[in-house]
Length: 126
Image (cartoon, one colour):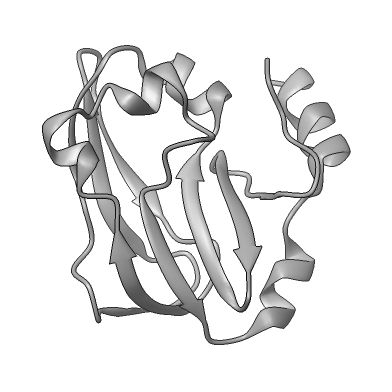
């Protein structure tokens, strides 16, 4: 299982990469593998505000539909529209295909997330 250093990870298997106060959010390889073949991604609305742990979208696979939660609070400033036509990009390379970019409301929420080592241990215990 691929885990990238320098990213933040949630217990719901989202990754977060922070660049200049903007948080890129996607799903991990663990989540993509567990979901199976992804066939549809419901993206959040740009300019929508979300609080930590709220549902920002839905990922549908051949196995099931799963809510996607945001592990941080903020405003959606961009979505990855490529996923509308090619949702399987989340299966083929989940770390290169973010779902949304959120302008952080409270950077201290990042401290509650796992680093790569903690996330690796978390997945091994599953």
